Image 1 (cartoon, one colour):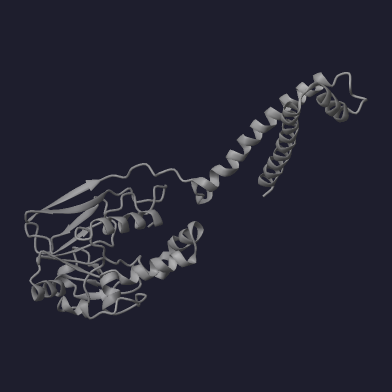
Image 2 (tube, one colour; image 1 turned 90 degrees about the vertical axis):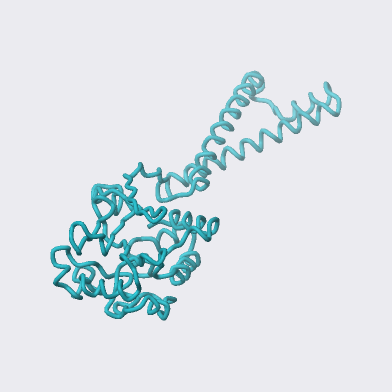
Length: 313
C-alpha cells in the first residue's frame, strides 16, 4: 500500500463515481497501516493530519458489493454471523475493525483448504490469529439465502493472481473466487512471492480473467524526498559554481589592472580617475558594477556556507 496508489484510486473515484467502487479491506485500519508503514509514509511526506484524514476515509469505505445480483464481493469472506446480505447493512463500519464479529470476519476470514472444504464449517483461523476459515456448507447457505452464484474475494496472495475454488467438483462453477491484483507481493525485492496479478472481467454475463506481471518500480529519491527538496541544494551548488567562476574571472582581470598599484589606495585612485575621465552617467555605471561585484562575493560566501552545512548535516 502506498500514498500515491491510494490517491490515484481516489482520483479515479472522483472522475468516474458511477464506474469505480472501492471496498474496505483488512489493511484499511490503524493497526495495519502502522505495521506496513503507510502511517509513517503519510507523516514523512505530509503530516499526522493527512494520515488521520485517510483513516476517516478508510472507516467510511463500504464493506461489500452486490454485482448484478449474482456475486457477493468482500475482501475476506463470510461469517457465522452472516445470513442475509442485509446483515452487512446493519454493521457500524465507522470504527477500527475489532478482533471478532461480523465486521472482523468480512475483512479477515479465509476459505478452507480445497481438500478440507467439504468437511469444514467454521474453524479458527490460526494463520490470521483472528476470525475463521469457512467451508462449503456455510458458504452454500449464505449464497442460497441471497440468490448468489459465487463469492468473490481477495485477501490471499495467489501465484497466478487468482484461484477458482471448485468445491462442488472440477466441472462445477467455483463457489469462491480469490483474485489478487498486486503482482510480486509484498514488494519488488528478494522477499516477494513472484506472483502474477489478476483482475476479473464481467462482460455481457461472461466472466474472464486478465493476468499481468509486475513492472519496474518507479525510481524513488533517497529518504523519500520530493523533487523540489532534493533539487534545491543541487541548484544552489550549480549557481555557486557559476558565481565563483564569474568572480574568479573578475579577480583575474583586477589583478592585471592592479599589477603596478598594489601599494597604493586603489579604490581612491579609481574613484578619482572616474571623476576626471568619465561623465556622471558612466561613473554611476561603474559604481553599480562595484556594488554588483560585492553582492556576487557575498552570495558566493553564502553558497559556500550552505555547501559546508549540507556536508556536515
